[in-house]
Image: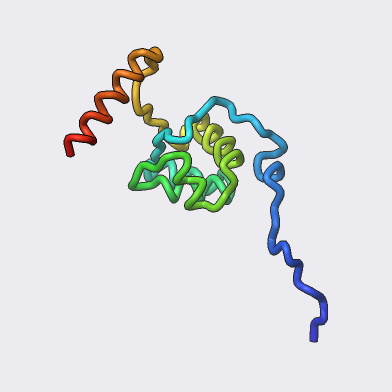
Length: 121
């Protein structure tokens, strides 16, 4: 009979171990950025590591935001951001920009139009 206590922390893996000590992504990816994975990318992700394969699985068949990926994989957002940026650079994920980069004034006009449209509903 094994009398050893189970570790109350469970199978804890430090975030820096997953990202190999990196805390900054290769490129900035917004929280609401939408990402997807093709079937080919899903197959290739099997060789990129367990965590990257999990992310590709979440993004296959349905585009997901960075926030959704972090939630579905139950990984910290910072870790997810680093891994996703790596996957975009490696061609395992496709980053879909929600809107072109525009100035502050143009963004405020867009938000005003969206708000007006929501009120009309």
